[in-house]
Amino acid sequence: MKPGVLVVLLTAAILSAGPVRDAEAQILGQYIESYRARLSPRDHYNSNGERLQSAAAIIRQDRANFYVYGIRDPEDEADSFFSKKSNRARLEQLLENGRTSPDDIYRILNGTPLIKVDIYATGIVVTILSD
Image 1: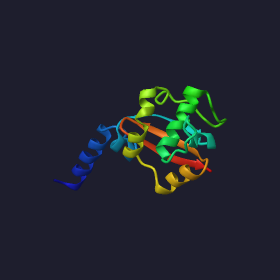
Image 2: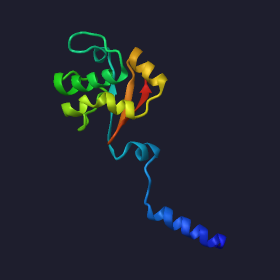
Image 3: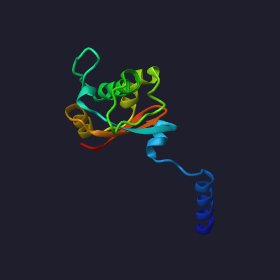
């Protein structure tokens, strides 16, 4: 096959596939939505006053505080996905399937960062925006 024909065929194949979302979407399935939240000190404790021991539990408590208890930080945004209790119950599994750096997990556990959560069908990606 002539090199020019190969280039045309490869270009056609790429263009026919349509735009490809980033690598996260390919691994984690369909993108659902994103939101931002400040993980304040009150998000680090459950409703019984016990200190939470995982980043997923803290993020889950933030969403419960937002939707169930009406406890919101000025930087907290709504999302339709975690407004449902059944989806909040899946948060630990979604974070396990997703991607968050060990440094970001440490900062969530030991600080009050502003985070961005990208929600996909089978996982979430958590990024620290600021401390």
